[in-house]
Each structure stands twice: as C-alpha cells, then as structure tokens.
Image 1 (cartoon, rainbow, N blue to C red):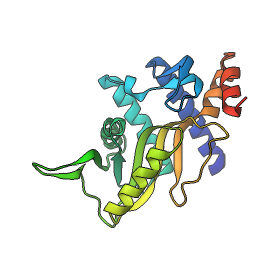
Image 2 (tube, rainbow, N blue to C red):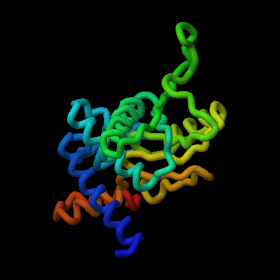
Image 3 (cartoon, helix red, strand yellow):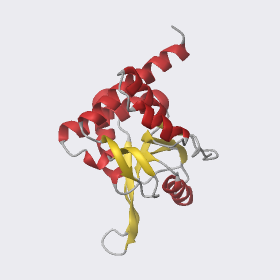
Length: 214
C-alpha cells in the first residue's frame, strides 16, 4: 500500500467512525432546518449537543488522531469561544493520553477582561517557535474563521498551522480561499452523502441536492 492509499484509508475509517459518533450523540440530525443565514437545510450539526464525559473523550480522541496524522507540527491549540473552548480542552487531554505528548491550549474572550488578570486571552501565550492550530465546530461561510486568523496574527508571532473543524458543511457553491492558512475537516458534506449511500439510506438524495444547490 502506498502512502497516498494509506492516508486515504485512514481518512475513510475516521470519517465513518466520526459520522457514527455524531449520529449516536444526536449531534447530526436529519429533517428540515433553517440556518442562521436563512437557508433551508436537510441536516443540522450542533456540537453543543455533546456534553458527557465519555462523549467528550471520544470527540477529543478523534480530533487528536486527525491532528497527529495531518498537522504533526502543531504545538498549540486555539479554541474560539464558545464551542471551541471545550473542544480544545478535550483534544489536548486525548492527545496526551494517546501519544504521550503535551499540546498547549488557549482561548479568547468575547471581550477583553478589565479586572483580575485582565486581557483577551486565557491559557498559554504562544511564542515565535509555536505552531498554532485553530479548532472549531463547523464551517459554513468562514467568517468567524477569518476573524480568528486575523486576531491571532495581530496578537502573536507564532505560525498558524491551519484550521481544523469537525464538519465542513459548505455546498459546492460556498467554496473560498483562506490564503496561506490550510483548512481541513474531519468530515465534509460529501462524506455524509457517501456514508448514507453506503447505508442505502435514501436521505442522501436530499443532501446531494442541497450540496449541488438544486
């Protein structure tokens, strides 16, 4: 097996495992939903529906495996408020458990604190030699991800290694470029469509039409 074939097999296994997990936790739901943008969607993802210790352990392990494989230079995880905060916490714990290596973690407040320790950031303060990976829940328009990139570039001398989201839910008409920052996801909308096809679940047709903008 070539390196390319091995990587493809790794991604396929991780995708199936992750979709199984999201359905089991009722994070991935099918139906008719109205998104923040006003768009009607046949599926909905809410990482906020993960709240148990065992579920966060699984989420952290899945993200840790993805980081180990695809972002091996990472030394620091940044969690945008609010869902990103618990996600990076679960992931650094899982990363240490699986690979016996400490990643550092930090997050930002919505507004800078004016009392106590003060400041906008909580946790580790990245240094020039660090490689920061931004962890967040889903990707739709990319607006909040661009804000996070701009904030980190202005605040720290570290290299931004990339952005990793759990689900890239963009349609084929919502593609965009983050310039010099790599963007990756554990699963994408086409992965969910393929998963449903493999299960002979006819709902794949609704998601396929949504993805194509039909």
